[in-house]
Image (cartoon, rainbow, N blue to C red; front, side, top):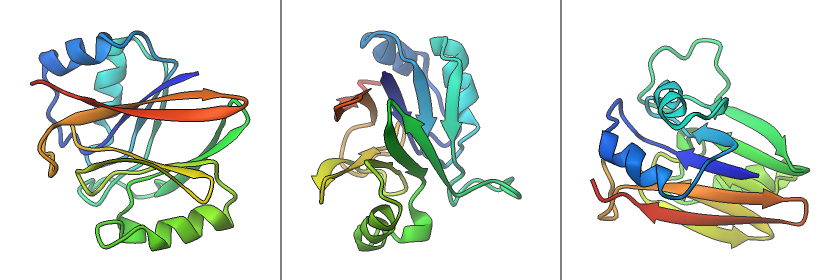
Length: 161
């Protein structure tokens, strides 16, 4: 299963980004980790992706009744999706790590920091695709997850806007 992971798009989608994302092939699922999570629908339409998982972030204002953390099982892997602000990920990952362990997660997809991150901690993948528009680590980016019954592999891709 191939998953496109986006975050912190802040209502800005460039055609050049869409073309860059297409270079890596097609995707089964699109995940948006918040801060203009409704952008997920626009990306999905342009990339012909029918399955979308999205969570609101701290800059999303129409969130009444929306879950701030969702859990999805993909290829028998438990994946938590959140923006990260409720776990204070800008300070450190300790709260998110604790939460992921409590939920027996295989992977956690998050945003908020505008910095990409792809690391396995205590057998859990912590994956932040960075920001598609306002990166704090120099380059706009997105992520790709390859999920199968026996593994989850993440990669960060730089957008050359």
